[in-house]
Length: 390
Ligand SMILES: *Cc1c(COP(=O)(O)O)cnc(C)c1O
Image 1: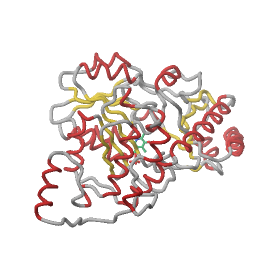
Image 2 (image 1 turned 90 degrees about the vertical axis):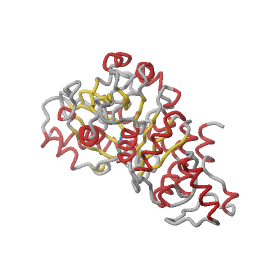
Image 3 (image 1 turned 135 degrees about the horizontal axis):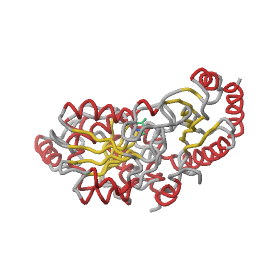
C-alpha cells in the first residue's frame, strides 16, 4: 500500500464497530475480563510483550488504534502514545540508559530535550555530550565505550541545521549505540527514519499529527530490536493518553498528507519572499538552495513542513523586533506549531548552544506558515518590516 492509502486506512476496522468509519472513543479505566482464566492468560500475554486490553493505563482500544496506525505509516515495528512530545522524548531517552552511561545529543536539539538531559538524566548518573549538528560520520570520534544513544534532530526546530543521519547512524551502530531521532519537523511522510538508520523515532504529535492546535500528544515508534526497553520504560513510568486526545490525534492523522503539502507550498513561497527582503540576512529553510544543508535535504527528505527561521540583519534590537511581531495580525505569537494557523516566535540560540556557539549575527525569528492565503501572509509580514524599520 502507498503512503496516502495507509494514512486513510491504518488503525481502522469499521466492520468491528458497526460500520462506523472512525474508531470509537473508549473512556475507560477498568476493562472487565470474562473469567479468571482469561485474565491470567492476558497477563501472561502482556508479560510476553503482546498488546492486550486489561486496564486503561495499559492500553485502551482508542490508543491502540493510533499506535497501530502510526507504526504502520512510519514503517516501524510498534508505537507507544504519550501525553506530550516531551514525555515521549523523556521516556525514550530513559529507556536505553543506566547509571554510568553516556549519550550524544545534537546541539540543535529542542531545548526541553536538553533540560531533560541536564536535569533528570544527569541525576541518574548519565552524562550528555552535545555535538556539532553538522558532524556527520565524525561522530565516531565522540562515541565512547559507554555511549548508549546518539540523538539526532533534523532540521533543528530553531536553527534548522541539517544532519547527515545515515552517516551518523552508521558510526553509532558500529559502536552498538541506539540512534534516536526527533522527527517532528518532517513527520513520517517527509522523512522515513527506519530507512535511514534510525532505531527510535520520536514525535511531538501535538504539532502536525494533531494539526489543529487543540491537543497534546507524543508518539514513539521503534524498530523491533528497540521496542522492549521503550515499552517497558513507558509502562513503568505510567505513561498513557486519555482517549479524547488520542482521538484528536487519529483524526488529524487522516488529513496529514494534504495539510503538509499545503504547509510545504505556502512555507516555501513565504521563505523565498523573505529571502528578497532587505531586512533579512538569511532564511533558514532547508528546501531553499541557499541553505547549507539543502543537498542533504534533497537526498534524504521527501518534503518540507511549514516551519523555518530567518536571521535579521544586524542592527535591530528587541524593541524593533517587538514592534514588528506585536503588530502582526495573522502570525500569532505563541509556542508550538503544526496547526492550521500561522505563528511566529523569537528565540536566542546563543543562550543555550554549547558545542558550536551560535552567532546569528542578527536576531532569529521563527515562522510557522499555516494554511492561510500566502498573499495575505506576505502583506502581514511586509507591514511588520515597515514597523521594524520605523
Ligand atoms: C513541541 C516539540 C516537542 C515537544 O512536544 P510537546 O508535545 O510540546 O511536549 C518536541 N520536539 C520538537 C521539535 C518540538 O517542536
